[in-house]
Length: 350
Ligand code: F6P
Image (cartoon, rainbow, N blue to C red; front, side, top):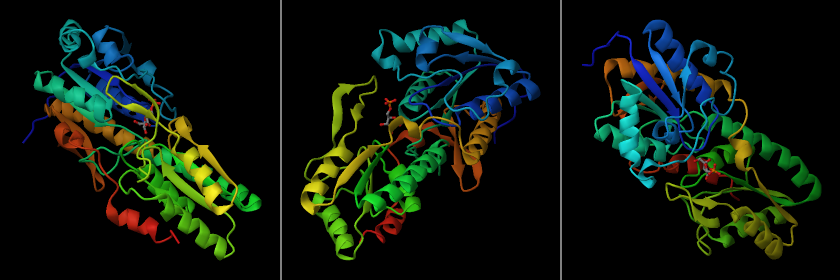
């Protein structure tokens, strides 16, 4: 059983990877409970791992934590900097952890950022993780904050596209984010009444989609809504990348599948088709109430975990409770959309 350590600590906090609505709710909760109840001191490391490696930081005080709950983005800045790709990156990170006299690190990030946190934990740096991504593809937790906001934004876009698609008798192909997993596509597609949803986990052929659009035309439905995750796989073409250039973690920039699909649909069905790429709009702006609450619960759990010495663990939503789970379990693979939910969506592909 872990024991709560009620002594003052000096804790570094960073946000890494793609930003996501709710990050500021997490930072605020960590800081507020830490400062008020544990009398902790906080160092806000700027721009993800870059801040720790380059000693770029701010003293995170109560005044920095005020008025940020409803704000999108992150007051600490973010980046995809990977210590592994920097000359002596890990050594510098550890040296600076000591130089800043930190007792622990709270790392708020997705699979890549938490992967670095796990390595530092294995090098004896006391780390607690908080899973973050609009993609909802982290294992061991039922949900990541940011996902609910992204789904709400995508659903609103689909609703708006519905009316214009119907008026112009068009097929609208909506491309949403989702590199390895189609959570946003599946949820927003179900919520928005999509006629077909294409995700990385369920490769299909162009024929499968054409059949649905043609079936609708035969029933007098002269418009269709197709939702496609950027990382989805068409059996004919595979995954489409916008550029082969990779970030520090080896991710290529995806995108373009929606456009290609719209052109094929138009050619093969005669229905005028358009592609809409929602892109970073899904990540920006104010978090939903759900994400603010989940972010706040994660922040409170993270600071408690630090004081209980639960290092190498991350906050995880299991049912309605937030519990500690090993970071390693969270990042072992990309969490795929469950078959059951996709089957719900498929009931409407006709
Ligand atoms: O990791 C989250 C994510 O939103 C992915 O869905 C997407 O592929 C990627 O970030 C794009 O991020 P950026 O353009 O900021 O590198």
